[in-house]
Structure formats: C-alpha cells, structure tokens
Image (cartoon, rainbow, N blue to C red; front, side, top):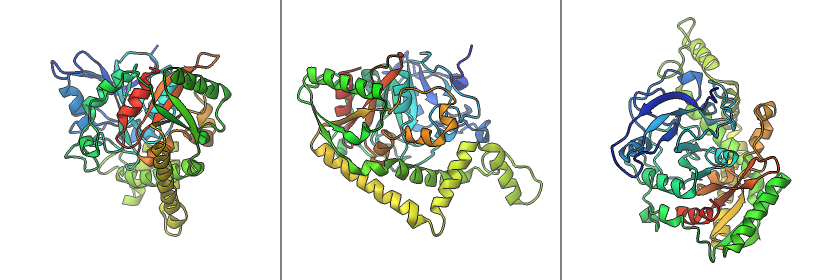
Amino acid sequence: MSYNGYITEQRIDGADDGPLAGKSVAVKDNISTDGVVTTCGSAMLESYEPPYDATVVERLLDAGATIPGKTNMDEFGMGTTTETSAFGATENPTAGDADLALGTDTGGSVRCPAAFCGVVGLKPTYGLVSRYGLIAYANSLEQIGPLAPTVEEAAELLEVIAGPDENDATTRDAREEGADYEYAAAADGDVEGLEIGVPTELLEGADDEVVETFWDAIDELEAAGASYHEVSLPSLEHAVEAYYVIAMGEASSNLARFDGVRYGVSGGDEGNWNDSFARSREEGFGEEVKRRVLLGTYALSAGYHDKYYKKAQDARAWIKQDFDEALDEADVLASPTMPVPPFELGESLEDPLKMYLADANTTPINLANLPAISVPAGETDDGLPVGMQFVGPAFGEKRIIRAGSALA
C-alpha cells in the first residue's frame, strides 16, 4: 500500500561521481526542478513545470546525487502533517526509501518532520543556502535544509548545498562571517567543555514525556563532558503570534502572483477579470491557504499595519536580541524540538490553533534567522520519537553539528 510520500516520482540522475554519488536525495515539491512538475502541494500548480533547476538542485546533481522524486507537502508549506496537501496526506513517512532529503523550514518544517520521524533535520542560518528556485511561502523566514539518518550525513549534504549564489542576493559567504564549510568534520561527537543554555520558556507547557526525554538527553551530554545552565528569553512569549502575523503577511503578498493568468488554475473567461481571478483562487487554493492569505491581507491592510505587522516586527527584533544575548553566555541553546510527541492524522486539522501552537519551539529560531538542528533524543513509552533541538549563533552550524553528533 502506498504511503503517499511523493507527489511526483520521476528519477533525475546526477553526475557520475562526486560526494553524493550513489545517494538518493528526495526533494520537497516547492523546490524547482527543470521540466519536472512542481506543485507545492497545491491544485493551483498541479501541472506547473519549472523551466529551470533551483540552485540547490543543480548542486545536488553536480555532486552525483540521484533525485527519486518530489515529496508530498502541506499546501505551500502551510501545515504540519501534509493533511493540507491537495494530493492527500502522507501516512507513516518513515519508509526509508531515500537516503537523504531536502526540505524547507519556514517555521519548523525541516525540524518538525525530523523530530516526528526520528531522523536529523538542520535549518541553516538565513543566507547560508541559496533560495533561488524555491517557491516561497514567507521569504524572510524560509530556508532550505537537509534531512538525514545521522548528523554526519546531514552535514555532508549541507556542504554540498551551502554557499553564496549570484542568483540570490540574500546569500552570504560563511567565510566572510568567520566560518567555513567543513561541516562534516565537526560531527565528531566531542562535547567536552561545551556550554549548553536551556531556555526555560521552551519547556513550559510541553508534554511530560517529552520533557523527561529531553532531560535524559541533557544527562547524556553531561556525562560526555558538556555542562548546562538555564536561561530565560522573555520575548519568546510573543514568538508564535509574531511569527504568524509576519508569515501570513508575506504569504498574502507572495501568493498574489497565482492569478490564473500567469500561473495557476485558470478561472475561465466568463465575466470580468475580477470574477476570473476569484474563481482561480477559489478553485486552486485549499482552506488553510485561504485562511492564512485572508489573515495576512488583514494584517497588512490600511489601519492595521501598525497595530499588527509593525508590532510583530518589533517583537522579532526583541527575540533576535534575546537569542544573541543568551548565546553570548552559551555555545549552543537546547530544547525539545516539538512540545508534543507525533500526533495522529486528523488531530491538528480539527483544531488549527493547536497546529499553530505546536510550532512554539521552532518558530522563534526562524524569526531570529539562526541555525538549528533536530536530532533524535529518545522515545515515549509508546515508542514515539522525541527530538532535541540545538540552536547556534549566526553561521554557527559547526557548533550545533558537534552538539547534535553526540546524540546522533
């Protein structure tokens, strides 16, 4: 029985040799692949074939990787469980039929699936990896990142895709930021002398078994030579609200291009252009996308921009400041990746607010544009995986890779 892991299964072969030769890398369906349907999980783009490869796809193929297909996803990345996909939900996604994968992380969509599937997911510093060819949901938040069985393999994939790109003005050269691209070498498991900060706010309200598993992992790190102290980041109280105001505002703007004329489902030629535009979006977008576009448009509208969007951006600056100050006193910060164990299909759609709040530990890192990695920390009594998240300073990928490799 198919688990519906791919929207399009179409093999794309890379170079004959390279660091990823012999490896299969599944690619999320919002990353452009030349001549291969790229839907973003939406009926709006069900037949769209990009005329070019995303930069990360070019780099994968040049490194010898084989792409087996385009993976299922929530529509335009708006969701947690793939249930908002126009092509149906993915069931039991830990099938293991690809060696590695590329995802995109707007508010946790690399780290959340990694935590829920018991694998490693790394969200890079904003600007480390090119976004050229990514069909974005929220430009200022989103990054492409690797998923892999181990931290070392995730680091090897990051080495391939990282680096500046003339097609993406937001990219930066890590070497100019005092870093380098030797990520795999950092996956040595050596945490002797590592100082870990634990933000207490990211433990509040979390499931008891998740918290217990987290502290067991901290004990394991202490036994390996690390130490920890608790820290407070008071700004995190506003993180989820700030994230959704900003993300929905950017989504409202980004998705305006899908009008049925240049891109997307045609609304037909009956009536005037406004009628056709409305039909295109009514038929092409799912309910969650419509909800977020409407809320984002409201937040950006005259009379409400200062009340909502500007305040959200002010909160974002405060959150970034809190993280920077905490990382002045610690090498990395650590928390549970998700405050709850994996939930069953149907639970999050019944309560959208619950779905939004499940991102409480991941969205702040996107607001701060910092790197973070989720690694397996253990399991609940029911055998469900629990992830542990490490956060580092900007371009501090090697720190979080070293910390994570002590566990995975």
